[in-house]
Image (cartoon, rainbow, N blue to C red; front, side, top):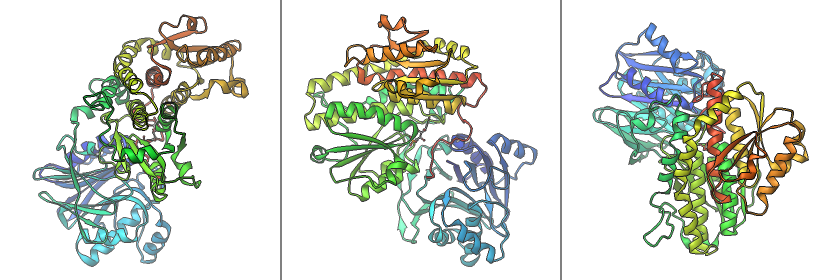
Amino acid sequence: MCGIVGYVGNKRAQDVVIEGLRRLEYRGYDSAGIALVHEGTIEWRKRAGKLANLEKALAEAPLPGASTGIGHTRWATHGAPTDLNAHPHLGNSGRVALVHNGIIENFASLRAEVEAAGDDLLSETDTEIAAHLLESALERCGNLTEAMQQVCQVLEGAFTIVAIDAQDPSRVVAARRNSPLVVGLGEGENFIGSDVAAFIEHTREALELGQDQIVTITRDDVSVIGFDGAPAEGKPYHVDWDLSAAEKDGYDWFMRKEIFEQPRAIGDALLGRHDANGRLQLDEVRISDDDLRQVDKIIIIACGTAFYAGLVAKYAIEHWTRIPCEVELAHEFRYRDPILTRSTLVVAISQSGETADTLMAIRHARQQRSKVLAICNTNGSTIPRESDAVIYTHAGPEIGVASTKGFITQVIAAYLLGLYLAQVKGTSYGEEVAGVVAELRDMPDHVQRILDDADELYALAAELKDTKSVLFLGRHVGFPIALEGALKLKELAYIHAEGFAAGELKHGPIALIEPGMPVFCVLPPRGRDQLHDKMISAIQEIRARGARTIVLAEDDDLEAAAYADTLIKLPRVSTLLQAVPAVVPLQLFACELATLLGHDVDQPRNLAKSVTVE
Ligand code: F6R
């Protein structure tokens, strides 16, 4: 949700900033802009649309060389995605330039103040107000850091702000509240970014900032203070992935690359999770085993695809631990007065670790004294920092806006959590836990085999290119996978798609079935609670009404072929674990169909990667 870059150093700032914006563009792509400090003035360009539009403008009218600058790629909140509303925004006399991510909630009253002071506002944004306030404060105190501190005290809401002063090329100043910001530590240069992708080609040393902090970077120094002016310190860390992980590696889309990385990602998510005696260990879980034994209810909170990972987790956690487990959309949970006690464990799932809805729900849970455990992919992000414990998913950077390896590793981490709780509570015998862990270790190979057959799914996508509507059915963990398959198709191919619990079909949705309508059916493995047979009945019901069935079934399930217009083979795994292989064909199908339709798969319309506003 908006990408922000800042740079001071010895290189051409325009190059560093534009390269950083390119790597952050997945966060928002409604407009892009850059501002540099050059000989006592601010030089800037900004354009509506993707970064390419800004690059074209820069090619037509190059900016002067400068070594201090800021940049922004926008996901619009206040004001339409136009040139005027694009960031950076300048103060009244053009001394200050500022970029912003987030929403300033007291924007209306501040706007009235700024207008009453006689300033001219050019845009509809909340950001421009902050630029005017910052410039006025700077005129009074003469120091950008101090001015930022004054302004942050009057701003309400969520914001990351990065600013430069035309009269001081030596520094870039940034502030954060409820919105992401990291510092890149270089030699003779320093960086600001919404995340480390902004500067990963220059340095892998980073500094994590706390809430309500201001950082000032110069070529040779980084200093941090609180909004109250008190000296503060960031937390240094080393980024454990490099530039190549943030590049496409020969694939047409980041998303396709990330789908194909899943065997490796699953392997990494499982690494180091058991001790020499085969007992599971989750090092990052800083909640004591005694506290975990007291847990009598689990509530999983998340949004979008991460929510579906939570739905899968519920089946596994309840089965292994016998602890009641609810799953709720974070934004609904936060504002409905949920029942939380000290013995409730709240599990927050988030790939980015910055989703505002999930973050607000976590804060609410902790205020009620529940313990919060995060399942997260992004080291140093806000959600794990504000949780009592974290299980990192180790998927590596996910750049494609639609989550794929993020989802699959969330599911793996949730399985590990369920097994760990079962081990601690003694609800599952050691051998059972070890057996599931052994099965999980085979997952990379299973997923690899599905990926090796991708061409079949691509051919199916080509056949169904003109379809207007697709349904997805599943039972048990196949139900959230059906929801996820539908979400992927909606967000990437802009096709109407819906996922249903197969048993629910006859209660209404079956009326949607028309002759020829494609319906993906996730068929559970044979042998558990008649799930398989019940699903076959649902498939028969829709075939009787002319649906075209695409059945995902175990590869030796001979019965399945009789009910499938197209059969997609899945490896033989236990029922609870089928979510992992079953999602992969649906990801491949959506990615390919969107590609064939000519859509931008990595940056679908209206979306952004990390949703940092509520
Ligand atoms: C869909 C997708 C989103 C995210 C959701 C939560 O493909 O990626 O639905 O899953 O916005 O994001 P995180 O996991 O970063 O909290």
